[in-house]
Image (cartoon, rainbow, N blue to C red; front, side, top):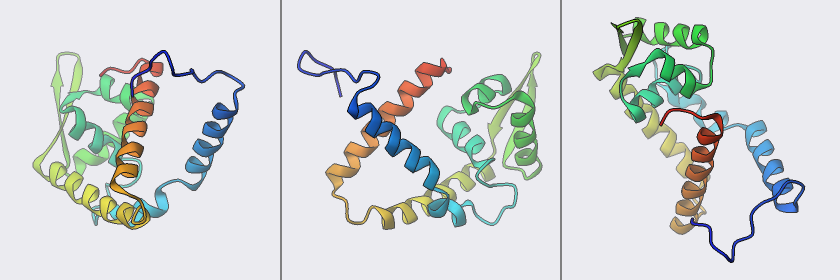
Length: 158
């Protein structure tokens, strides 16, 4: 959604910024965990904490642990524990790459991401059943824009 001369920017203290803050707070408080909870599959290594590792590897491909850590917004020790847990389950593989460690999805990890996404989509479909396709597209576009701007604000690698 491009900006133009007829668009007024959101400014600190504005009513629209207050509404956005309130709605994001409600969303985070409610969390999507109710929708996602049963959707991680039967592998005990995959939960709400480790799935984000799988999803990032699926989206961005193999990467070094430092980049993965930055994208996750975690400490290196926490990211390492999550990667280790997934590696032990055969869902990711690690290999030294110079002084860094490269992390990649295995075929089993790929399949797990597909299963989780399918389960989540089914449950989210139930939540959004009353929405039009246009509203869904708008929500997806605005969430993508928010996530892109959040990444830019944190100066994350693309």
